Length: 190
Ligand code: 5GP
Image (cartoon, rainbow, N blue to C red):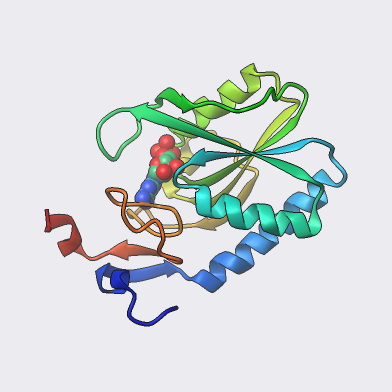
């Protein structure tokens, strides 16, 4: 970890370190490569912005072991109150291509209530993908209650609000290279 970065003072606790993320990403890429073998036309679908870091690192790791893949990005907004998602989703940026007949792997940052993901899976299936699976770097305990088929999971993390590695608080902390919990005073600074 770089010494003296501006954000270090705001982080109460590191939950998952940069090294752990790198190792796990490599492990997940090997698992996916083993399962997808010589699949043609594999599409990685990332939902912005939270999963951007994981998509960039996962795609490069998969490139070392797996079949060629295309990268697709979507942006959605979920209607609902502040920090909880409602499952009602509006598409801000759609896929750039037709996915009919393609194997799709959704690259997710974190699954919490699973509502957004559940909507996304239905949407991708309605566009006639040959298969839709999910790789998520983090999963919270709530997600285990809902029946979302997340085939590949990096880390099970506690039910706390985390930031870093793409995950934000009020659009900040996405560039933090590890995942951690903010100090309480950060929320009351205003
Ligand atoms: P879900 O629909 O599963 O409740 O929410 C999924 C999305 O909410 C994630 O893709 C992520 O962007 C956001 N999210 C869920 N938990 C956290 C968290 O602990 N920290 C941050 N920054 N975002 C989260």
